[in-house]
Image (cartoon, rainbow, N blue to C red; front, side, top):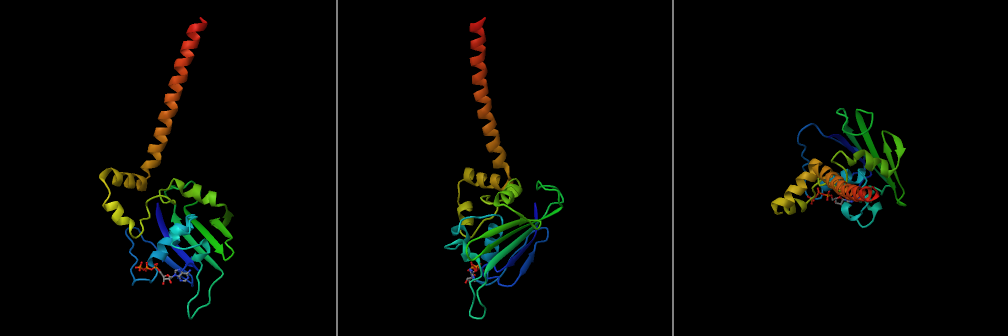
Length: 199
Ligand code: ATP
């Protein structure tokens, strides 16, 4: 899945609308300390539906809204739009390009949109859940997490990579299917016994 662009408006330090375009390949965001690099990653996490203020490095959810600076008044809402290239049909939606928008107001009220149509958080989560970029996926590696991954044992590191690659989901499904099969085999054995007795 290729992320095409991210637009931030009133999100954290990005008071004015700012669009970052991601070309295929590696994108680097460079800047001095405190210039807002991590805020870009927060925006990505947030637009995909993050519900925890702590994961966004804030005390409460409305902390993502631009709080004002000496030269600029605070804003009443934060808005982030993520545009994803879906020409390969990786996302379960009939559009070659998909935009997900999340908006939040000071009272904590929020809205989501997919291609400009209002929707629920659940719709956003379902849209992204199979893409490998959704929340809780280790595709977004924040500051401090990198060393955890690099210093982890090989088995743990493998789990991180499998999760990022979207393998873990299939492994979980396979385990679930195996458990069902086991239960079915048990049922079948019991049925065979029963029919034996009935004969
Ligand atoms: P570092 O390299 O130190 O991690 P960084 O470039 O990643 O820096 P961020 O942590 O992304 O920087 O940005 C922090 C800046 O964002 C701080 O100056 C902080 O005041 C500002 N900021 C965070 N939330 C808001 C907000 N709601 N309103 C205005 N500014 C905010």
